Amino acid sequence: MTEPTHAAIRVHDASLAHAGSTTLVVRGVSFVAEPGAPVTVLGPTGAGKSTLLDAIALQTPKEQGPELHGGSIAVLGHDLRGLGARARTRLLAFVGHAEQRGSERLEGTMTVGDVVASPIFDRDPRFDRKEAGVAVASALDAVRLPLGMLDRHVFELSRGQRQRVSLARALVLDPKALIVDDPISGLDPVVAPDVLDGLRTLAETRAVVAAVRTPKQARAIGGLSVVLHRGRVVGVGAIDALLADPRHPYVESLARTERPAA
Image 1 (cartoon, rainbow, N blue to C red):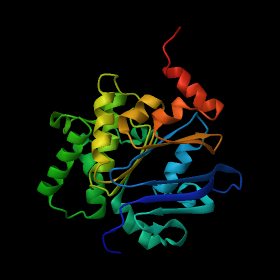
Image 2: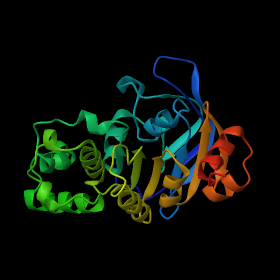
Image 3: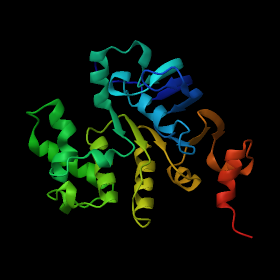
Image 4: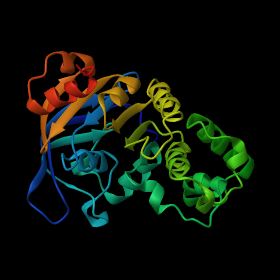
């Protein structure tokens, strides 16, 4: 497979279940994410946000990823239903995925530099180390981490720093699609706005889908917001427009969180 020329993520009426189950946890979701038009996904715990993002990030039922039971998902021009194992492996080089709680799975004894560079050398152990270093430095800069952290070990880092390292690893191959689940979990409130602003900048040149917790986070990234509740879409549109005219009790609850106390 040559480098994808189609830069969009297209989800059409998609329904998903957990691996080995027929119980739908996501029902009838549709949206398009492309460069300059990111998508944020909001919803309470259990709404199906992570399941949806895992599917877009090419996780398979064999990897405990979700199973598509209806509709379609196309990533960079490739429909997931017809994607063979070899084509999927090649496509993964163009899809960055910072999964929920991914920071907890980082190998504590590795250095930050080695963790972030690992996707490069997993694909090509003979890759030029100088070029890899440039890619790692660029990824760290994108998530607002100083280069001085390159030689620190993961176990020395705070939860928020590990979260940013996980995001940098997802960026190091300069993916055409970036899937990020809860990007500022555990981050210091002073740092979080910079990371969200960085995602907004990244979304100018690639398709970005991010699961976020609050309307404020969605607003910071921009683009379209998809609100899920119990696996169903209860709002689609610019976040401020959704909050100004809520059509579902959950969207109304989100709007109330932003209203000043009486």
